[in-house]
Length: 547
Image (tube, rainbow, N blue to C red; front, side, top):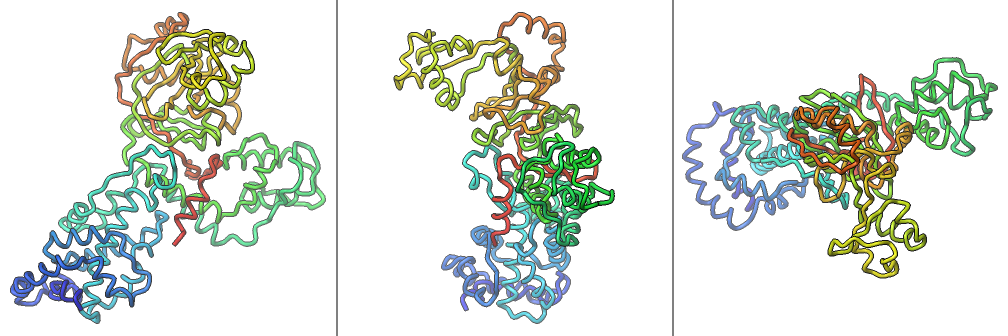
């Protein structure tokens, strides 16, 4: 076969039979010189990827993920083999086996084929030896790539995705592993190191065991009204049984006891807190649906979030703000320590807060609010067209395309020109941005800001904004961002706020803001879940397990 001739050089490598450079047969260098010219000519005639297909038809479930890269790397190496040492092959094989600990599927990296071929190297014919060499390299590239930036490409899944994919030099990484004789270290260098990822690995191990041992979980009927304190409901015994199965109820269960009493209310609140449900103690449809979720469902959620963390930046920065959209929380991190945590409100299902990263640039006190295009067209213009006093009530200013300020009575609300006008709400108690906003310029026009509606932070379900992130105690967060500028002390900031004048202050310390989305994590040794507010988990899991 042409392919056999094309990789004739591999025949001379004794790794196939027993494996190390010291066992090379005499005369191999002469053989290489004689074969090089023939190999070079064949290389220009047909690519490895095409030749691979010619000999892999007899091998089930083998599909090269990096055919072009294989062509390139072997051409650059003058078709000399890579996996000549047993220790390198064993390192790679162990890395593939361990991929399951990170929620990856070892079969994606040719595990079954390599199990068989590496166990019987000395019995393989020349063609099979060449095939094993190629598959080892493809397995390394695929495993390293999946660890580095994920198995899926989020930019192909979501229409709005603002996180740049993690870059990787696969040939350089392979060369590093071979030169250092440490493939395990090369692979480990691209595995995410964030604490959330490490915690999810611990949760994965736990939930695999729980899912394996789960037998016929109690099902609670989702038909019926919400159950409130001291009400009677025939589902109460099954609710207790399910909570017992999940480790939240230890007391005796009596089928005739159907009153929703205080001890059960406390157990339900604990469950709601862990699973990111509003902790009001009311057993509504969301709580029952979550109670009916199995350990297998939790396991799938963990697998999805491990994949997400492979999409996210490897280095979030020495000093950064990370917003977990799904959990309505903002964390300010310095040198690996969380120095502040704030509750947040995020975008609704219809106006989702996007996933992206950018650098803080400035802080605005007594901010004005320039109405975003969507809100302008869907809310402001229709409301103003119906109510002549709407603009005045909202303290809005209107500017035409030239920047000229207009009164509401001058505007033809039925004209198409009005969509090109700028609407701005002036600073004041009714301004939805509150007293401060934190700007990190981005194409989504998203930022962190205060709000006059403080009571909303007491709710557990807080997907209520138009995309921007409202922050509880936003003034405190802004103060931390200006902590390296002594002139902006408490007295100075109070003076600015009391003036009512819009004041912009440029930040001088480097702080990255990351808007991320994850629905499972490990906190203080316990696996926690957030509601999948944008309903993304199921679709990701389906894609991860499609093959």
